[in-house]
Length: 99
Image (cartoon, rainbow, N blue to C red; front, side, top):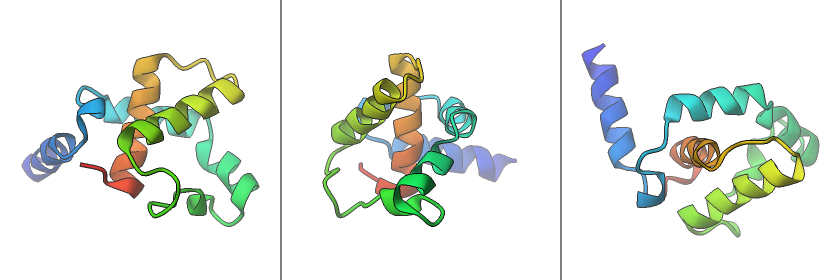
């Protein structure tokens, strides 16, 4: 339990300033609730993870957050700004690793 808490603290510290106060647990919950992976799989095939291309057009944490906001708007998900940031922070942590 102590190791998990230490890892979580390091993960939060490693996030860019734009995700400073992001709630990672909320982001994970919203990703599951909104079935993000299923939508991505329909768009790019496979398990949907190919949509995350760290070498592609998303080159900053702000652009990543903007892409999550784009999904929020286009799909009418109704997420608040702090929820968009939470989702983007989780995606950053899992795939992009912007500092």
